[in-house]
Length: 203
Ligand code: TMP
Image (cartoon, rainbow, N blue to C red; front, side):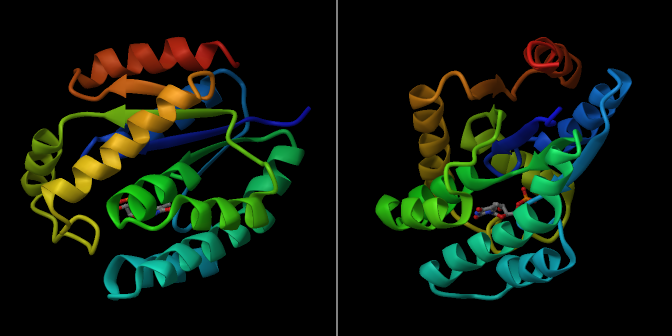
């Protein structure tokens, strides 16, 4: 039986990485064979593209094209074969991030993103997408609190992240069956309970 494809999304600082690891462990405890991965990245070439994307200044269309180049590789080398082999994929970000960051944040035309999405994915979509949502001021405080040097995206303005957040919320409203909003201001324990409820529905 084909596995399922779950993606985690949200603005930088929403805390999804903590839950990414937890969710992979939870699914394993339910007897699933799980592959935890991320975008941009997930393959040797994808990780090289990630390093460029997070550090090199570039035209917004170059950025979108590289995101989809990494995704094409990710689908071919990892996601599609693993799903066909019955494994479950838990990916820290996928195409909703391109709509939110390159579309909302950078202002790239939605038709251009849709064109690339149709080309690379041919209708393929995650089975479930969890959007970790919180106000941008809290996310910014959390990012500063980590003490880590910010990457090219994390250096963006509050207004940029407002636009990114808005697109995530808009997409969740138009695809409520696939995209679930998680209130990321809650405690980690409470969020785990919410995730367990949502994910149990498709296990
Ligand atoms: P991460 O910090 O969640 O690992 O993701 C790396 C950054 O890449 C994050 O700031 C969001 C950004 N990103 C995009 O701008 N577009 C995309 O399509 C993806 C997958 C990530």
